[in-house]
Length: 348
Image 1 (cartoon, helix red, strand yellow):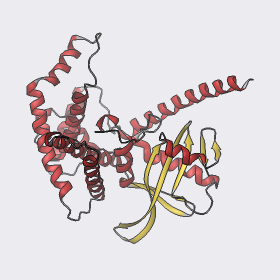
Image 2 (image 1 turned 30 degrees about the vertical axis):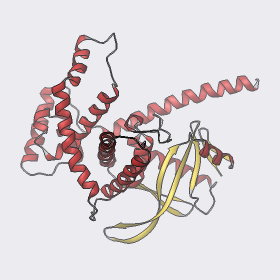
Image 3 (image 1 turned 180 degrees about the vertical axis):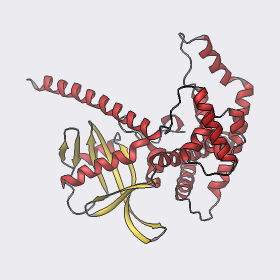
């Protein structure tokens, strides 16, 4: 077989393997977020919703998934009255705001009359005004939380606050000198919205997984992927449509999903650890190639505090991303790729 033919065959095999992996990841993500009960129709569903409402009104503590199901299944008007539904209501309105802002999901010429009508409804002045009023309220409340420097036991909130303030500074630094005050305020609003959306997404992801972090051993050291890791990864390398300017950051594809990212990264790092290729000293960062795509993961040594345990040192995954930038590619070329399995290589 000629080199050219072999390369074409490998590329074809790789693409099929990536498709299969994306399907597996999608199924795994669906299993993570799935509600534990299924209903064939509204006749079965409504009594369950009524039971959740009754338990909630009686002060009974609902599980995270029960709250999510109740909030996302109730009629819109009723959800407004439930404080526990604020995050879900915000996330839905925020996604709608992004869709309308960028004109995503515009009906095709072949769309039905109903599809076109529903889309136009979202653009109606009264709907837009109501959406903006609700976003104004969320903006004011969340901005105050980001400006509040008082200590909190919510580690996720602390990390989001830290990153938000960094992003606000970067937003100003990346602004044109002649940018109007109105446009600067609009940019700040979008950062605040993205901040709250990141908080809600990470919080819900951990709720669905039923964990606060995932730990493993790498080069004899404890490594954790936790809420702080997810904040940096999610904010920087997912949802390109929420970015206000080109921050030169690469984006994940469906081969790795947010919902399963913690376990997928843990699985990959454990394979690398088992291979022994990294030796005895944990590096500051690791390159690996997974299903043909190059990734880089950074580790930071941090002190963690937990109830019932004295402060302890660990290595935290600071960030993790697919490699696109020339600087990263150049750095990887200084290393040698070592095969772990058919679709995984580590660079040492």
